[in-house]
Image 1 (cartoon, rainbow, N blue to C red):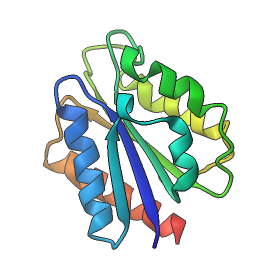
Image 2 (cartoon, rainbow, N blue to C red):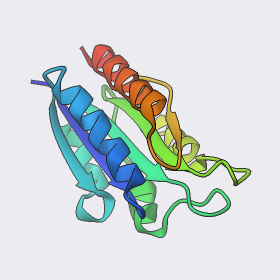
Image 3 (cartoon, rainbow, N blue to C red):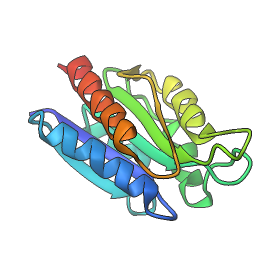
Length: 147
């Protein structure tokens, strides 16, 4: 069975909710899902998955959260050839670098040889109905890419 690993960083709970929405959508498509907070998991665990997803919030002016920095750096050292990846996250449109963490992780995954399964999803603060639909479509597209 296809295994998806979802790793998230969340300060307010918004990004954890985003990760949960993606996980539930994938489970509904018969995918095994493991979801972990970024400090509880090592980037190398993505080597055991078919689908690799990071959900991160963007802190302040386009910064990655401190708690996900080690994961981000370790990720770029991996060889994830043959894996499908996706990135989603939350931010605040008040800032110029809205959801920059999504773009940063997209670039990090590109270095690993993994294939992008869907365009990243950026959510303003918390997931509203339209965001939930976008996240479910994101999950479906990634699953299709992995099959």
